Image (tube, rainbow, N blue to C red; front, side, top):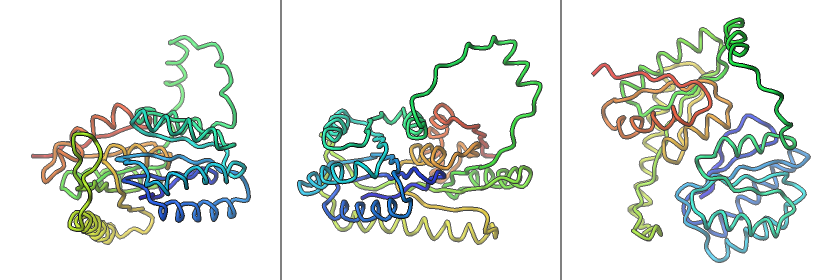
Length: 291
């Protein structure tokens, strides 16, 4: 399936692609892209983030080449973020059929993909570096900028609620935007050759039920917060990738998250917190559990 990722910039649009794509997926995506281009009135750039991507049905593969060939003038750049060599090969093949500039980035280079999409041209040569003393003097001479957008990943545990409470306090202090997100992973299993086992109706229904339950819990949380300015969203994907991707797309400058909680938080945000702290380009504050 192809799901949009909310983006701050008006000329960049991002999508997370999961599972095995069908011709119908591309039909819907193509219609959405045509709507976007028409509303923008000019070329746009795309980020396509592949997660748990299992390839194309034959008709969908041909649809991808039609897509690349038919939108060359509408799309300035396409950044494909993936995790397998064959995805890189397919990106290179797409370049042969498209006038758009297409580049492949490994998942760990997500920020580099965003930098490339945002840059109007190749970055200018860097000026001569200041020495360490000059840099330290500049930092100490001016106050740090106020936070503008705070992100709180939640798994609805008490520890994540404590992180949210602290984030609300900081948002009021700085007059910052506040977003709360929850990531939902598919329950489908994969075999040793990576290709997924054929999904059965119970598995698909389980995914849908989990996502719907998460949306209901997020709705109750929004009602408790009772602040229409706080944005809440449930998204498909692994927690680490969803958090990093959302932070880049929305230009978040602070991530506030809990660690070592109960009821699944250790799985959701334990090792994930370490990954976020090492890969996010914004500040990351962690709130430890009282237990």
